[in-house]
Amino acid sequence: MMARRKMSLNTLSEKVGLTLSNLSILKQGKAKGIRFSTLEAICHALDCQPGDILEYSSRPAETEIE
Picture (cartoon, rainbow, N blue to C red):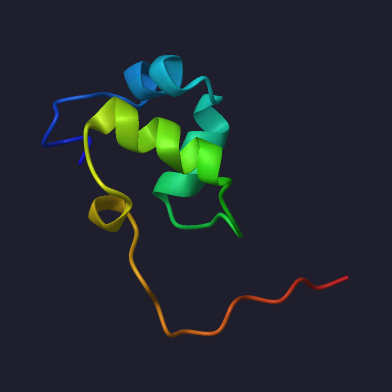
């Protein structure tokens, strides 16, 4: 979606109010969760629906090693 909207991660960060590192984690698919308010802000900034940027994966979640 960012490419379609010709929007950089920096610009999205400014519009959404998230740090670059947090957006990068989301973009790479490494986040364990996302707040609905964050998802709403991203969708608003990119003028899209949640289904446009989210993808279901049937692989099991990675477990933390202590």
